Amino acid sequence: MARTPGQAARRDPDWEGVRLHVVSGKGGTGKTTLAAALALALAADGGRVLLIEVEGRQGIAELFGIAALPYEERRIASVSRSQLGLPAGEATTGGAGAGGAGAGEVLALAIDTEQALLEYLEMFYKLGRAGKALQKVGFVDFATTIAPGVRDVLLTGKACEAARRKGPDGRRRYDAVVMDAPPTGRITRFLNVNSEVAGLARIGPIHTQAQAVMRVLRSPETAVHLVTLLEEMPVQETVDGIAELREAKLPVGGVMVNMVRPPVLDAAAVAAVDGDHREEVALALGEAGLGGRSRRAEAVRTAVEPLIDPLLEQAREHAERVELEREQRADLQQLRIPTYELPLLGEGVDLGGLYRLAGELKRQGAA
Image 1 (cartoon, rainbow, N blue to C red):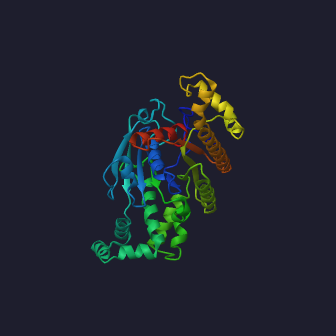
Image 2 (spheres, rainbow, N blue to C red; image 1 turned 180 degrees about the vertical axis):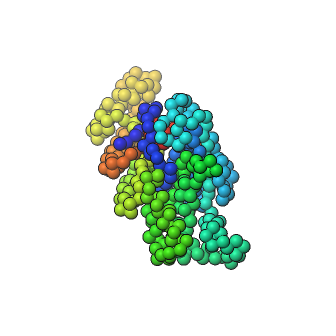
Image 3 (spheres, rainbow, N blue to C red; image 1 turned 120 degrees about the horizontal axis):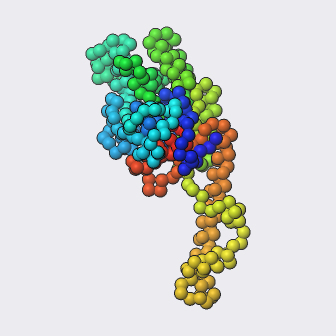
């Protein structure tokens, strides 16, 4: 199930037929980064992908190094297979824009709750100028504060509408929509809007809108992906989050394991790290020339002695981390869903790093 960085350059995508990709994850795991990388990967075969932000943090704009996004769908990137380090002319089957030629494009939308509610009021109640008046007296903030379920209906509703929108030619406007969603701890409640609005209105436009949203969110066209790290708390939250999604009958996607560090020591070295290896380390340091020009054993030992304990301590710490990561991988494998591993980028995630992560997701079959 697990895919690792640098695996086979070409494979069919795991999410054929999925149009709405919801990306969640514990804070600090890089969910916004991987949501953006997934959007790029989905567009790389010539597709048109919409990347949606719902938390008002302008994280997408920051990632792409552009001005703050307004409440409108705006083109932010073009992408081709070659930009992701993939061979041209091998478009995968079933992905966004599969079989298309040339570069794809990513558009972005930062959903503004206030504007979305006014848009909703105009659409269903034809309030027009009256809606603007409600905005001025603070009704919008009041409504979304006392009824947070309404806010979630608006946010998820906008994403579902985009996923099913059609152009004048009858074709879908977007090949895929990627939502940078709230954290794992509240993703099920956020998506399961029907239960939130049930007590507000059992009939009428709000109820109808909630039901329509749930039909999309529970359909095979939707997949909820969770981002995690190979650390105990993020993995446990991921395991719990998937259990909650399954209980709510929401479609579980894959797990994206972010910031994976390559092992420095092989399995034999990790297994041997607890032994007494001072003499072996001293000899190896001396043979590497760290004892200076002197060939006398005593002089070499004096020169390398201060290095031995710090090196052994680092080896023990590394071995502990490798063992912890092994345990976390085992927990994720128990979920029996596709898992993708993305490398830790030591220089940080700039635009080049974002495209590199997109290439890894594409290679591993996430798009």
